[in-house]
Length: 378
Ligand SMILES: [Fe+2]
Image (cartoon, rainbow, N blue to C red):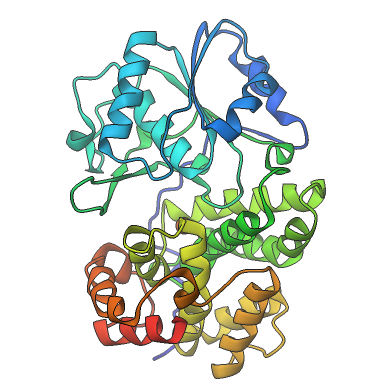
């Protein structure tokens, strides 16, 4: 299969938050921007609740912190009920991807006739009258950059995607100091998730030169800073580099999105209950190697940016990428995370059903290919 030609003339739409505040102690600058708002509703989690004081917010502030790790519909409805009681003019997401995804939904739905199920899909959201700020406290999801929110269906456990330009933040604040306390294992896994966003967009069937630029910047930052951020959580430069990598990954998600890697990672989240970052880290080396033959130049660029010892070919690429991940302390074997061999065919069927992502993959993925990758990762 030939290398993908540059599709310079193809139309895409790139949206970004109107304002970005970046740098050490940038959190306090949210308060300066937010001073006109009188009723601020902060969506957070117990570990991030303590950061509310750093945001410099004035006026009435209410924090909602009872969010479960993978929020489902009833969990989102509970936050919406609290927001309706409070009547905010500004919603702040202060946390990881789930928190920011919920903040998006709260900002557009708390004063709306629409329920979450009414807005699942693309461009179903009627509008937004409440300001929205996003303050990530992990580096991985890039949710602060984007217009998409994922909510778990409590029956099927599938992720429902809501996508709307109304969910774009008015301001995103990238303060590396808010990520100092993220444990090394979480830093490693979420960092590979950010890398996967960039790489899956970069090698995507729908890749675009504009997004390739951001993806390349993100990949280079991960190669330069992820190991440092894992080794020393208080390394401000490395933490700032990973926050930016995560943001660039988020920009990749809107116009191009992920591909096979994320499709194969989702069943590991829904069935095996692995955190999103870890699920993607486990799949990442296998998918990079699977796609290498049809994206040789781009794969070589990734291998070079990550400093992989074996280069970009075949088995050496797989083992070099596995070494890169293991070097961050990640346990890469599914069996060690509680998977059983008899689970794998069902997960392969689950992943094969995620057409919206598989269709983006540069090399076609049949259910047998998916099963072979799970077995290789077992
Ligand atoms: Fe991801």
